[in-house]
Length: 191
Ligand SMILES: [Fe+2]
Ligand SMILES: [Fe+2]
Picture 1 (cartoon, rainbow, N blue to C red):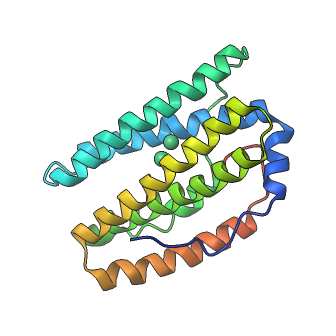
Picture 2 (cartoon, rainbow, N blue to C red; picture 1 turned 90 degrees about the vertical axis):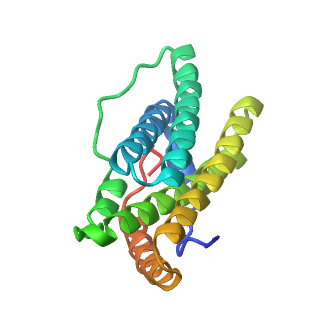
């Protein structure tokens, strides 16, 4: 069920993220909140898929726990949440979802998996580079969680679609994601 991303994030991304760490935290908090909301919307949309519901409820709770932790760090620093902005990376990926009813779930599961995998990669990069022991620990712990999340989504994809179809579509989406990552400028944000 495991796979690799097709392009690695350049180390300069860490410098940009840390150049305005408050902005990074604000974006990170929004990512966790949106991940929890998305998991709950999956629960609502697929009432006939018990394994998906179980997985998504667990995921929503874990993303909420992450949100609580990032918000605590922000509040301790006297930081407010930023206005909600569309994330250009997520927006580009969501455009790849086919509207055909049969493959809609497959595309969503695989795209969400790739987003988790990219989150894992970036939190790990950031965690490794931080000097503050507590923050380093925090980001390395989150990186591990995102690593579990990416496999959860692929497992679900395999449950509802055939092996070859999942593999072929994952191939296409990983290529597309690599192109998106190459084209987007770095920001003080997760993506
Ligand atoms: Fe998370
Ligand atoms: Fe996650």
